[in-house]
Length: 253
Image (cartoon, rainbow, N blue to C red; front, side, top):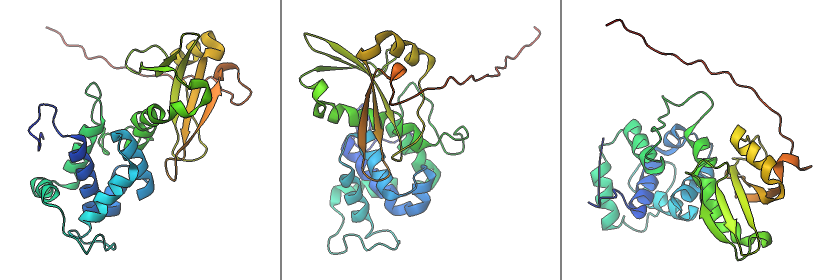
């Protein structure tokens, strides 16, 4: 399924993606919410908003606007009609089933080098929402808020998420640099993990390696900063061994 409303070679614009997510949450309500792995609407606004790099309240506004169209317990903006340009988006996508709409939203938020993560295909324990929280949503939160931390003030930011170097961002100044690994949690507490590569780099860089944990997407996100996580008193990592079974297919020719 390939759709493009804007006609742009890049596909949907950020505005169109935001509007369509609002439409999805209004039309499919709690069923749609749960199909994406969210426990509540606030969590959905936060996670999807940060993933798209728009204000979470914006997504709620679009949902409320479409509540005048779709039957649900909310009244929505019953004193105002849906704007024409947004109604055009609705009409173009009205035929999509829940599963097709979920696939579309996945395509908005999944990198091209990753497989679409549909609910029925998701590995056990790995929901769409969790993937965003530990990925794009937490990373975009960091990019928007890192400058609020005094130790990062006036530093230059470089995104290294696609370089496989053991951390997500590099912050530099004429005097020093920090390697920052970003993690995300739905609640105020939970478990995080470092890959073998991340832990090795943390051990190597020591104080120059920073763990930046974004917490509480289900209510109001905030963050914690942990320097030197491999040797910190604030956090203790335990080594977990995983064995993976791989299959190959052989044929006689």
